[in-house]
Structures are given as C-alpha cells and as structure tokens.
Image (cartoon, rainbow over all chains, first blue to last red; front, side, top):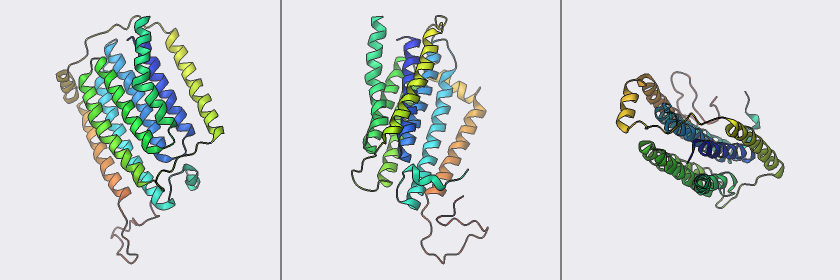
Length: 98
Length: 183
C-alpha cells in the first residue's frame, strides 16, 4: 500500500462522485454523491497523515462534523421540497432563484 | 509491484465497486446501502493507515448515523414503492466525460509527482489526538460544536410540520413560518 495508490483510489472515488452529481436527478442521490466525494477527501487527509506526518486526523474529524451537519440540513431541505412539489426531482426546482 | 496490484484489487472491492454502485443504482435505497458499504470500506482503509480511532468514528457516525438518516430521507420522500430513478443518456455521457477528464488530469499529476519523500511515519495515538483537539484546535473544536447546534436547530425548523389550521395565530414577531413562505 503506497501513497500513490491511495491517492489514485481517492481520485477515482472523487470522480465517481462527480459522475453521480452530474447524472442523478433526485435530490437525495446528489447528497449521496457528495458523501462519496467528501469521503475521498478524508481518505487523502488520512493518507498524508500516515505518509509524511501531516496533521490530517483532527482535520478529518472536523470534516466529518461538517459533513454530518450538511446532510442533516440537506435532508431537511429535501423534505421541505418534497412537501411542496410531491417529488424530489431536481428539474422541479427550476423556480428556485439565486 | 505485486503489492500495488494487490492493493488495487483490495481497494476496488472495498470502495471502488461500492462507490460505483452508489452512483449507478437505480433504486435509491440500494444506493444508500451501497454508500454504507463504501464508508465501511473506507473505515477499513483508515485502520490499515494506522488510524483506528478515525475508523471507529467513521463506522459510528457515518454508517450508524448518516446512512440511517439517508435511509429515512429516501423512505420519506419516495413517491411510490419501488420507483426507480431514470437517468437520461445525454447526462450520462456528459457525466462520464467530466469524471474521466477529472480523473485523467489528477491521476496524471499524481503519477508524475515525485512522492518518494513521503515515508510512513508514526501516526498520532488517540491520546495525542484528544490533546490536539482540546489544545491546539480548541477554537475549531468549539466552532464545530456551534455548527452542529446550528445544523440541529435549522433541520428542526425546516422540517417541522406547519400548523395545519389556517386561522392559527401568527407568531408575534411577524415571521411567517407557514408552508410555502420559507425564503
């Protein structure tokens, strides 16, 4: 297990997240893709903490807290959207401004 | 080289394939469960990288908390039982091109970079991590707790069911929290 292989794996994960973000039409699925991408970033932090001794572990903990907060608020927004429109397909959000 | 190949296969089954299923599964519940597998695989990688505390936290908060929340989110907002999500073809091509382009650029940069100066070092123990959190990163730690509090309150305010009776008394401060008025 080398640093290079780990970084390539994290890049692949992030790319998959991008793919999901572009192709998915349902709001919850976008949150899932964002999770995958955040996970890839965390993996890079941990990899550089092991190789080279960067202070990655506290950063991962903070990133985790931020991701959890984002998911909670994101799901609340999705729920609100569902109550208004009866579904969570994103093309229904075309009225959203700004 | 054999070790790298072995790690590649391991990583593919731990995170690569599950993540692929997360973004391609038509059934959203399955996508969420594959996300749980991805996060568990990442926890295994953390453990392999000498970060046992982070692996435990990953399992507890992500797999235990976030995935459960996501399952609820999917179940609550699902219109019909067993509906699948259609993905239109043009978007699929666009997404694949974008993802492959990103991967190509970053991967070529990684392959060309000389990483030989990064050697394995001793990772901080859980005790060191606790000391760092409550000493060097204390302000960030407190800000994170305020952020979580704000997230809890905002999630409750946003998802709260509005008062069903239309002639209910408006809040005194003039804030209209009724359905359809959220900015």
